[in-house]
Image (cartoon, rainbow, N blue to C red):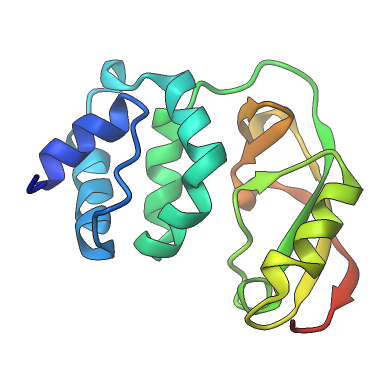
Length: 164
């Protein structure tokens, strides 16, 4: 099936991920969503589930965190609760480039697994800790917090891990 930004946007807004689409089309789709989508089209909890599972892949394809954030702020359900101390295992090259990811966990152990595992493959990993005030949390999905990284407070580096 041939996809257009409009057809892919419809799938995304329903919380469906199409992984056989190239990065250029995903970037065009997110730009289309940012410009055209009415907020009522978003199946917000389904999109939170999609992002929790495939967000890293989408982010790597789109390569424009500001655009991703624009869409996520509109497409996710939001959060009505207290702030949290959260952790993230990040790739060193993303951290060093001030490109901190969107998904965070309250478990230091889970974040450490990512920091010294999957996210250490290309450049080494870094274990991060922050405080996420409620307004920084865009969604909580299965104890995974999808956050606006620009609004996180007290970001600290806890550990560095060698490249795998």
